[in-house]
Length: 107
Ligand SMILES: C=C(O[C@@H]1C=C(C(=O)O)C=C[C@H]1O)C(=O)O
Image (cartoon, rainbow, N blue to C red; front, side, top):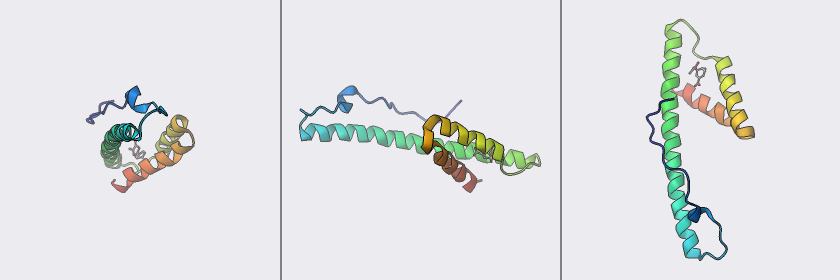
């Protein structure tokens, strides 16, 4: 898969993730700040990937309609929902449905 999205380094440093009860409150706050910066970068990447997915989905839809086909493919959507459910368990299905809804909304 090719993507135009820059992926942030998501691997937190062990020093930032270790919950050591001997840490000062100030050091805990500092580590939380570091981790939140990483979370923000991951969220930015997720948003960029959603935008990329919407654009790809829109292109498929336009091509299918140009070829005389329907706007949607429910069998394909079911495959995607099943993939997310396999990968993410109970939250996979609603997440896939939300992604499909976002893609439809802009088609
Ligand atoms: C993008 C397509 O068209 C529609 C959008 C889909 C999607 O956003 O993943 C999936 C199936 C179709 O309803 C496709 O058929 O692959």
